[in-house]
Length: 308
Ligand code: SF4
Image (cartoon, rainbow, N blue to C red; front, side):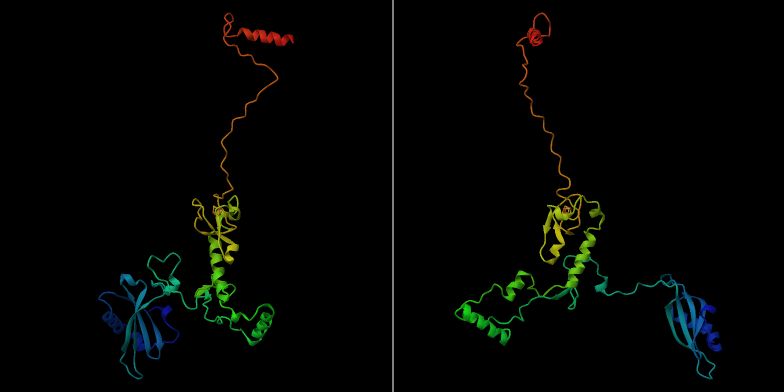
C-alpha cells in the first residue's frame, strides 16, 4: 500500500483488505497477465475504497487498473463497484484534442481542399451589396428632397428625376465598384492589420535580409505598387532573382538584388589618340644602308633640331 496515494480519510478496513477481490475483478476486465502489482488505494467515501494495480500492457505505460469496492452499512461482504483502466500521474497520454479550425496552419491547404470561412470571421466585414441603396432619384429624406428641388430649380429645368437617363457616375454603386467594395465581404480593419503584420514579419525592414541590403525596396525598379490602403506601405517584388519574388514586401524591405545598388561596371575604354602638332616625327621609307637599323634621315633630323 502506498502512503502517498492514501487520503487522510481512514479507509474502511474490510474494503481495504479486499485486495484479492479487487485483483480478480481487474483480471476479469483486462487481458490475461496484464494486471501488475498492487500500487495503493484511496478512500472514496464511507465504506468505499479504490484499489490500484499496475498495467503491464506496453501501450499503456503509467496507466493503472482502478477497482472500486464497497460494502453496505453493517454488512461484512465487500462487493465490486467497477473496474477501469485510468491514467496515472506518469501516464503517456494523447495530446489534448484541438478543433480543426485551430489545427490548420498556413500552407496546409492543397489542391481541391475547401476552407470554409466562418460567418463572424473577424478578418472580414460586409462589403457593399447594393441592397440598402435607395432606388434611383429617391430622396434620402424629405428635407433633402426639398433642398435638392430648391437647388435644381435654379440650375436645371427640372429635378434629376425628369432626366431620361439616370447618371451612373457618382452613385454609391459606382464609388463602391471603384474602391473594390462590391463584394459580399471585404477585409476588415483587423484583417488589414493582421495581413500587414504578417507581411512585415516575413519581408519587413527588421529581417536580416533587409538589414544587410544596400537600399530599400522603395527605390527599387523591381517594386510593383499595389492599390488600396496597404499600397502605402507594401508592394510586390518582381525580381526573379530576389528571395521575395512574387511576394508582398514592405517598402522598408530590401535585398542585394536592388536595381540600383550594384550597377554593372562598364568595360574599359581605350584612351583617345593624342596628336602632337608641335613637332615633326620623320618616318624614313627605307633603312639607312651603312648604319644598320638606324635610318639616315634620323641623324639629319636630329642635327637639324640641334642646330635650330
Ligand atoms: S529586388 Fe530586392 S530591393 Fe528590389 S523590390 Fe525586390 S526585394 Fe525589394
